[in-house]
Length: 300
Image 1: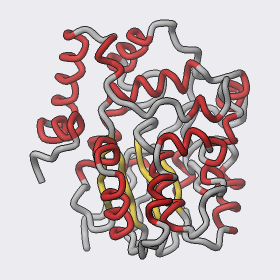
Image 2: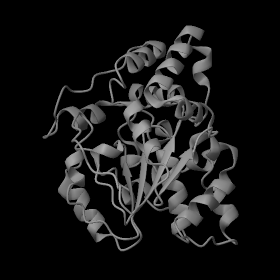
Image 3: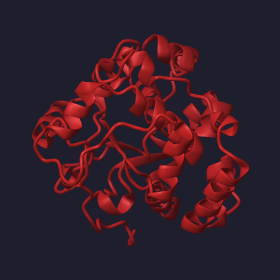
Image 4: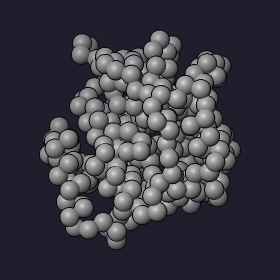
C-alpha cells in the first residue's frame, strides 16, 4: 500500500538517539513494541515472551527485547546483539512515529495509558533512580542537550512540570500518542490500551497472538496468563526489568511498582485534572483524548 509513514526528524536527549533506526535491517517477522514510557511496555514485552516461547518462565525478557533508541549501551552493541538473535525478535521503542523508520514488513503494537497514570508511574521510576542511572544517562558519550536532574519532592509539582513543559523532564507525551493514533488503521499496527489489558488480560493476549499469527498453546495458556499478571511479574521482576533493576533503589521490584491506575485522584485538584483534559483535547483531538482516558473508542 502507499502512504506508509516516513521518518521526518531525529530526537536526541539524555535518553534518545533516534538515528539508530536509520538503515536498521528489519526482518519480515520483527515485532516492534511502541509506547510512551510507563504505559505498559514491560507488560507487553512479558506477554510477547510468554506467547513466543514455550518455556518462558526464566527468560531475560528485557535483555532479549532491547530499547533500541536508548543511547546506552551504544548502538553497535545493541545492533550486534539483535543480529545474533535467531528467534523472532521483539524490539522496544518510545519514539513517536515521525522519529523512527517504519517498516511495512514488521508488525507494531502500540500501548497507550492515561497521562496522569503515566506520570505517577514515571515519578516512582525517577524518584527511585540511583547514581548508576544518572551516570549512564548524563556521564556517557553522545549526550545531546541538558542532563536529567533529580525530581522535586512533590509529585503534584512533578505532574504540573510535565504538563506545562510538554513531557519534562523526559519527552512529549502528546506527540507520541497523537502520532500512533494517526496511523491506527495501518494493517501492520495493533493499538491497545492499558485499561483493556487490565480488564481482560486473557482476551487481549489472544488478540495479540492473532495479530502476530502466533498459535496459542491451549495447554499452557492459563500459565502464560498467570505469568503476565502483576503478582508473578513483581515476584520475578529481575527477568523483565532492564539490567535486572540495578539502576533503581530497591532493585527490580521497584521498577515493577504497582501497575494500578487512578492514584493521581487523591493528589491532583479538580483544576489540575481539568487542565490536563483540556490539553489532551487540544493536542490529540476529542476522539483520541476520550479513548486515552477510558480505552473506549468513539471514532474509527
